[in-house]
Every structure is written in structure tokens, then in C-alpha cells.
Image (cartoon, rainbow, N blue to C red; front, top):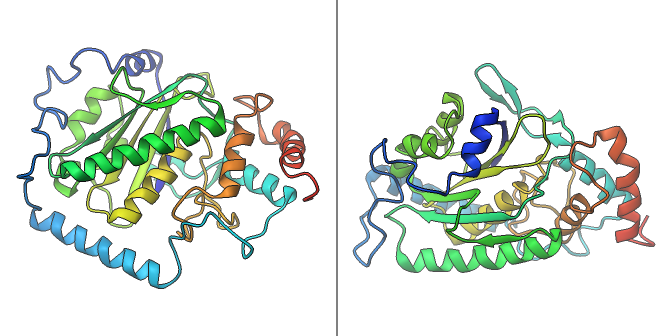
Length: 313
């Protein structure tokens, strides 16, 4: 799972904000959205997609056999206190997981100021034509309920809608994803070739990821786009929704020291945990301002952690 952030030139920031209006693909041919929606006669998997589906089915079975992809949110075996919570918040919300380079992104955490949304999040969920109707309906129910949970935690309006979305979530199979470049460029004019290739050339080690866009000179998000592999079995796909939608709100990094947490690439937990909820509440505390640096934020973070976990220092 991966989360990346992009800055936007001023014109691009405006275009992204308006990307839900009109037909952005009118000059670029058919889009994922224009393909026939899934019906009872869903197109069969291509050989490539079938191979990917079988691979992830085996991976989920292996993970479950090793006690991973837990759905309990943490328990007596994963204790943490206010000090640990503050330290984990710092690692997760004040570092970026990937460092930009000339050829793409390096898997190396880099200190970064606080970034978060200050506008309502209007999330659109869009499926490729190979995703069956029943699966689409189930996923929509999962995402709608999860959006409501994230909204309660952050006090930020977050809703699933097709009206002027500023957060696009695509569920595509192997072949649909490889052909996704034109649609991505239409939604986000000016997006780099390297960014597009991150979508179209995904290795099997990446199940899903999210990109956030930040207008220049700000530390607030204007839009985001996530991709979820359609071949993932139910639990892994739901885990992707939980991690990517939560990370798109601002907890940008993963830390192997964070436990219990989905902001941790060890895949121990599939669903948002009790500690993750506190991290989101801390990030969206009004006292935590976009643009705060690590030295500025640390004393405040420790104070808020104590308030959330009194008597657990």
C-alpha cells in the first residue's frame, strides 16, 4: 500500500477543484466512466487479471494463516499509552512516506509539515466494468459507512457523492488500470509522466495507493485520487479502503513501530484501530494547524495525547 503527495501549479489547482464539472474527457476519447456498467453478464477476467486474482487470493489465505489482517482493532496484546500515541502521531503525521526524486519517488521517509483537509471531502467511487453489481453495491455500503466514521472522528464533512467530487476512488482490474492513463490526465491536467506510470505500471507488491494534491504555497489538500485493485479478495479490498481513505486525510507515513495501527506496512491489522482513531482526532484538533513543523507541533501533540488518554502516560 502506498500514499504519495503532489504539489499543483496554480492553474492546475483550479482545474482539479472544477474537475467534477462538465465532461473532462470530451477531447480524449472514452473513459472508465463511459464504459458499460457491470451487469449480470460481467466480462470475464482476462488471463492477466485472472492470474493476479489467484495471486491475491493465495496471499490473503497465507496472511490469515499467520495471524495477519486482524479486524479486532487492537487488544490487551497491543498496549499503548499517551507517550507512545504522541510518538506514533509524530512519525505518521509529520513525515512523508516517499521522497520525490528526478525519476520518481524513493521509499524513504522525509520530515514534512502538518497537512490536512480544511474543505469538505466529496468522494466518488467508480468501478471498472468487470466488477460485478453485487460487489459494487457491497463496496459502496462499506465506503459510505467508513466515510461517516471518518467524518465523526475528524469533524470534517466526508461523504460519498457524484456531485463535484474532489476525491476519486477507482476500483480497476489489471487491464483497466493499465489503460487508465488518459482518464487520469483528464482529471488532473499537468500530472507528471512518473505519476501516471505509478498507476499504470503497478507491481504486484502494491495492492492500492492514494495520491494527494496540494496547491502551491499551502499545506491543505485540494483533491486526491486512490486506486484499489479489483482482483483483491474481500478482506484485502476492505483493508485497502480503510488504509488509503484514512491516509488521504493526512497521516501520510507508515511506521513499523506503530501498533495497533493500519499505518504500518506489516499488515497485522486490516481495519482502522483504536490508536488510528486517536491519531485522526489529534490531526483534526483545531489547535493542530496546517503547515506546523515538527518542533512546533511536538509539545502540542504531547498535550493532546495526554488529554485523550488521561492517566496513561
